[in-house]
Amino acid sequence: MAIQETRWRPDTCTCLLVYEWDSLVTLTNRVHTFKRADVICPEHQSLLTELDAYTAALENNQRKNKTVNYVNTQLAIDPSSIIFSFSGMGNDRILNIEFTSAVVLTNLQKLGVQQWADTNFGVGKVIVQ
Ligand SMILES: [Zn+2]
Image (cartoon, rainbow, N blue to C red):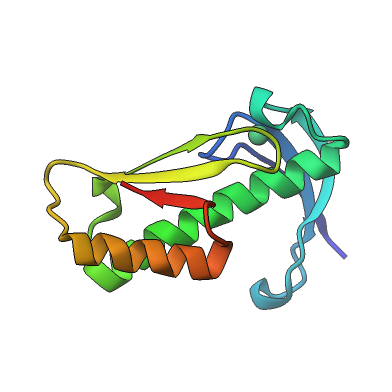
């Protein structure tokens, strides 16, 4: 056991969260264990516990990362051309995806991203604009 502590601020909200992990465990088997929230952002403050806030912040961040990665790998669009934002509160935050003017997507390409997001996260969780 070599317990490490990481303070994490997601790029999807202003929560400041602390989790533990064991540096002797291989990367593929490593588990992050929530320890505490130093800051809970306004969007996640309505949730009941610090663990609920961590769980929601982590899900929001992973949903954004997976969507950006999908657009990057499937449509060969550089992540810097993808603009993301969130609306909504608590467990009902909606990820909004837009593109910079450097990117021209057809309606069919946008529909493809929207359908992938609906299938993977549920209808209404990601809005492709
Ligand atoms: Zn947050």
